Amino acid sequence: MEFCPRCHTRLTPSPRRLHVLVCPRCGYEQAETDRPRRPPITRQVLDDRIVVLTQDEARLRVLPTVRADCPRCDGQRAYHWTMYLGDEEETLIEVQVFKCTQCGQTWREKG
Image (tube, rainbow, N blue to C red; front, side, top):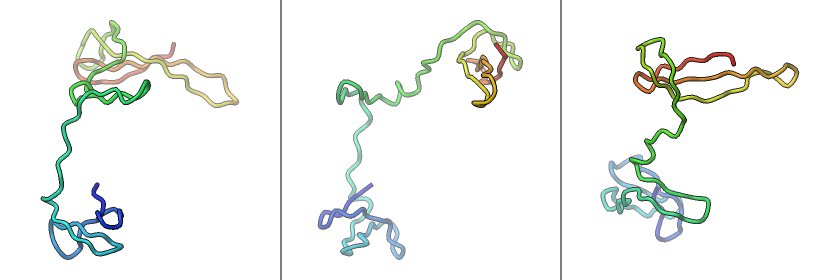
């Protein structure tokens, strides 16, 4: 997202010219190729609660794995989490959800 250096309004693609960004307020134009490229995502601690991850770290799976038989590929390991289903009027039902680590098949079992 780019902003106009004059009036700080967000630049939008020009309807008449390719690869040109235009300020809808003051008419400033900027070629798209002149935009500075963002640096690659790196791990930074911005404060005590916010952590920015690299793209490799973002692909990590943080769910616990358990021994479970996949109904599709006969895999032996699956990610596991618990969900509670029901309304406020009904009693909640605990459901165990599994996702195979090999093929990605998801299934659930009542607990």
